[in-house]
Image (tube, rainbow, N blue to C red; front, side, top):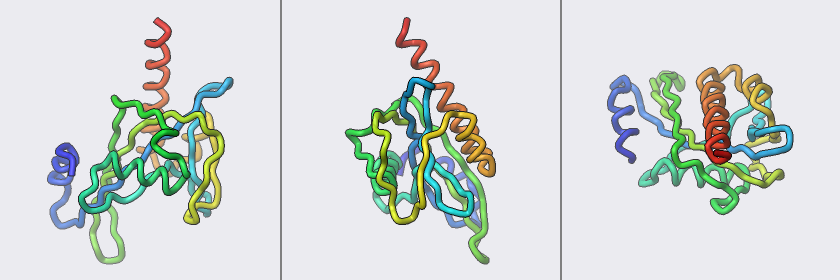
Length: 162
């Protein structure tokens, strides 16, 4: 497990079972600006591709595996932005069991418009920042991560122009 993740988990409430997930904020550039990929799980639930880390797996391996399983996008379909990494941390209860979850999000660009969703999803969409954040409104931290990703993309584009 990555050192920063170990530190976060060590600081989590000790009576809770720890779960680590990882995924990508996937975007593509269009004439109208950057569009972000969200997956639909039914009951008006949209989310970014992500999933649980398997034993002996590093967070980046998990992110690539999960985005592949959930969207059909392979490593070669994704151009990872190496300096972007954001965390979401939260406690929750699963029945009577107390849990603590850490989700690590990386950022990657693709030029693929069509994705092949897994059986666990009902659909997908490419959204501009405002629409994507609106779809993620029940997940405040994820909406914030999306905003940070958009800022990173804009800054990167400005630096490439100069």
